[in-house]
Length: 239
Image 1 (cartoon, rainbow, N blue to C red):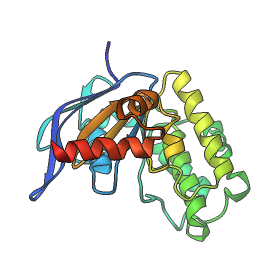
Image 2 (cartoon, rainbow, N blue to C red; image 1 turned 45 degrees about the horizontal axis):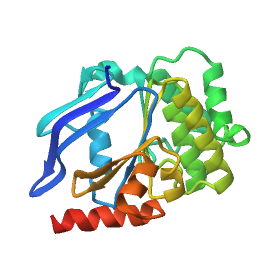
Image 3 (tube, rainbow, N blue to C red; image 1 turned 45 degrees about the vertical axis):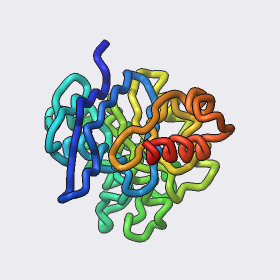
């Protein structure tokens, strides 16, 4: 099987701090893989390595069968950053249109569909600079989805989003996965973690546990994923 993502001893350091430390990871096509861990655990750095925005110090990352970084994968990968990478003096529609053009989208209806998915039809012509933080998160997600990528990497996509829209997002994520799209999603929201097919618990740049939500709960002997993470982190610290 060709994995959508495969890393081998992937390592990235910033001075004395190893943000990603000899990390081995495999994500299958059509899988929703969740990354959980505290701030500073390496989730965002790992995502930046996977999309080619950072270069590893050692090891290897392969995405859709190609070694990263590789600009040729631009049209096949969607990436939503933790901090919005939007143009404040453009409207929501113009931002989505711009990112669609970068990825070679020539189907005009895709822009409208992306805005509809995130519930922004009525605000499509508003300047992004005038939108609230939650609405800007919606624009960012539309920009990541508009070119219908084979792989979606989403860094805390539902921060600041109301509960009803969060549910709608996850229903769409599941439809995408059922259609063969691979998703890697970081989150601090435990009910969202339970919606993933598999989870990777990260601490100090390493995966300290991996498995389905049910497997992780069973192995830790706990009833919820937050307690499961604490159990694995305690065992990792002791080791």
